[in-house]
Length: 310
Image (cartoon, rainbow, N blue to C red; front, side):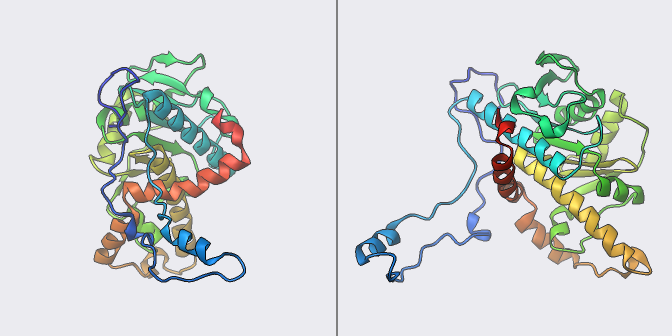
């Protein structure tokens, strides 16, 4: 969890992701020993100084207080809502994203009911408990959001953030009632890490339906295809969970297009070997990779719509 105790905010919070994976699996991090001078743009002294500069390795931020971490996470979630609106993954009042509070892990932040994703700011988010009661905020919350996300956060301590919207390709692919196939490098990010919930029982308004979704998601999967409904993704960070949703939606689109282009549908597709797909997953499918993948999108949307951080 992002924080296990309800201690004062002066305590250094825990960063909710493993950081023991070396970044050299996807980035060049060593500086060359070759000495050169870029003629016309630097002197020999400037060149020698440049060679001494350490290479910056982007990683997870560190926080001095729970307040600082909470603000950061709220801003990331608000930026995620703006991206969902930009990509037209919103649908009326349907769709919700939540994250577990870093100081009080039995509470989670969520969007209010009937607010356009493209207008959501960090300050608009509502804090609720696992009994469906509002702790902070003065707007109502989607009941289905509580039933789905409350069940997931209650059952999976590793899930910091959960994402579910009614995106067009996700809900279309969900009608197949089957998992994604390893047909591309990108789809390998979900290989062996997602499942299908085959029993659509209507809008999720009961605790029983929420528990059924949790059971279908399983103890370790990061994503779930809800048959006749859509997609749900989770993550150890807000960044990761949002990225997996965006990536899974595109994988659904890719497979629909690929199957449509073949006379025999999925039976004609060339699948990546299982062992190879599992190897690719180890490189692009873990929490650290998901976190990194989100950063360019976060930079883009916050520059386009900086008010989401307010």
